[in-house]
Image (tube, rainbow, N blue to C red):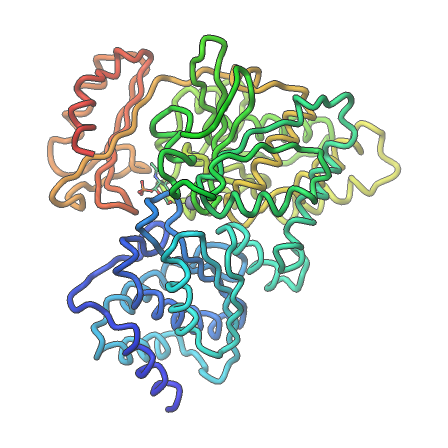
Length: 529
Ligand code: NG1
Ligand code: ZN
């Protein structure tokens, strides 16, 4: 068949280094960009097959998110803007690792197993971040997609690509499948939410943004005019000189618990950092004594769920709200959500697809990883109830007002995946509506001191975990050793797990005091980072 001949010819231009083995991990393939050309080409092929199979548009995003500029990666996006289904992750790994002469057989195997009709049309959206390698790597994806209906969006944030895939496959019901459509939808919702807030001062509208020298910086600039001065952004690390994610960005700020390089903040000013592909965000400010205060994904989830719960009460809507976290959630946040807020809290394995999946089980599922990756999901029934009430002219003013706020909140949220720009607008709107300062938000609960480190070991796969990665089952004795340390301290918790995106083991610990964390012991491990 001519199609397969073309695959053969083109794959020779994107040869696989013999013996190289890579795994489709938590966020797709991720490694040094020099090793990825053949993977990109093959993911172009696979995305085309996935599109034929689902008869829908599929997304391919070229990014390595918060990882160093030298790295790159690729992941597939399914029709509703969600991560590709697990069975296809297995195909992705098989295709990527097939030696040159085995590629066609591996490809035909997928076609046969999935009973794909090759006559079916295909449509693939490709997006990339600002890494120097992203240009040629996304070109390799397009070579794989070939002329089967691929659409190249060029530079977009990861969540913008997810959003546009979803819009395309819902015939515009979720919005227009363009970057401008995305700006219009979000900015309109933001303006609607904030327009009736009395006396918003310029200080309240001001926000410092660290763009991590990445794509988020470019895109938030493009969006600014749509916001009509309702938000005044001062942008740092905009990519004009610094290196991507280097000493800046959400991951640096969260893990190092310090301000990024280049951000000039004065006491009490609200600041936020995106990561390299703008699907994560964390907030922070400098306290009166110059102390650094971090507001991470847990604080964001708490702020948003408190706001939503209050609106549901005001609207008199009986909808179940839950917060989904991972083992990295600060113990104080879990306690506050369960004991004070009385919302359901679920813990899942690390990785957004697990949180997303769990959040789908509720009317309203708020999910955030502590690192700032998250969003809110509304069930179809919940959205319909909110809409009905917002349009009901017989209901009283308070209920209607709450329903309208909820409706605009739904429109502001990118429900396909965590989105730094959408989350930022939501947080800004919530703070404005509730008349809260960043300090008041921070004071909702106090984080337990915590540390997160990574340690290189010979083979991280020897560590096997259970209970949403909070306990190890192998190697023997490891969990007992952790338990015996942890029980010496109050409110202490610690766990280790192999990373799904890097060749390291991550170590997390929290306790009621810094001393309880035995920092010296941890510094020894940190030296190996
Ligand atoms: P790994 O490398 O499996 O810990 C990291 C993050 C995840 C998630 C993925 C995907 C931490 C502790 N882990 O996963 O939360 O964001 O990357 O980017 O932050
Ligand atoms: Zn990211």
